[in-house]
Image (cartoon, rainbow, N blue to C red; front, side):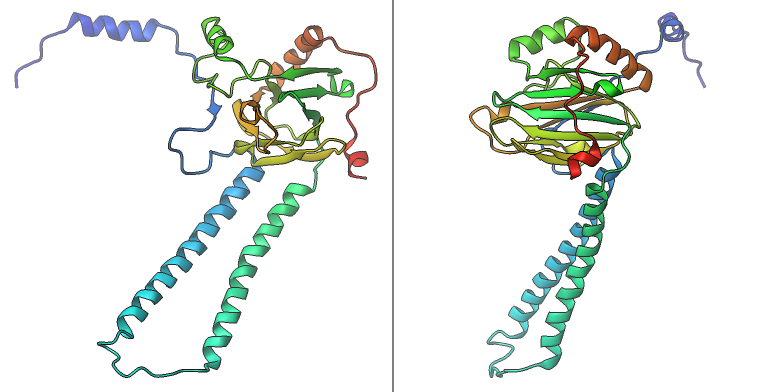
Length: 295
């Protein structure tokens, strides 16, 4: 066997790879993808349970569809004029009538029980580590408020970046084009820590909006004069994008939601920086306690 000639270029390349610093891990981004036909990867327990219910329903629906299709094909073949020249008349069948009544009931019960369990898990609020309030504005923006009692005491507006603003943000190094997707990137993200139970209070101003984030399995109406609540616990750091999911006017399609999940240490530092940036106030927070909001 002939030996391969030694390559100096290969040696230099190997040395460079060993001596160069490791590449920084790319920020995880959850956003819609072109030609995506499945649910987005979930990062909350509610989301995981939604996917589990969805997959179970797909199996049931597929089985029903295949059964009905096979039955129709069999009937068309078995009872055509050639195979059944003298048709019979059947006016009553106790077995069939019981079967097509009992079987659908059992199927619906099999769907309803896990569905109600999931609804109960979603609607009963656990003890929260953090409470944040989101208000859907009449100018198609979101306002986020952090309570002073939890280290906040400030609020700010989150609006979609225009094409020029997005280009400048990418050029300035704020994020890559992947991290700042078109029509989804915002100027001020909702920042929250990983592995913490967040109580999200949602309301509207002047018009009904909807706060929806697919990767969290989260969707809740923002209604003027009413405070709705939900919760989530993100399991992975990254940037998660959603949108208003209630037709709310001419700029409904330009009302994105961006949540950045960071480490607990990074979140604490962000709180301190945000107090200076947005101007923390000493007045009591307008965020209701979970118990008071339910009443």
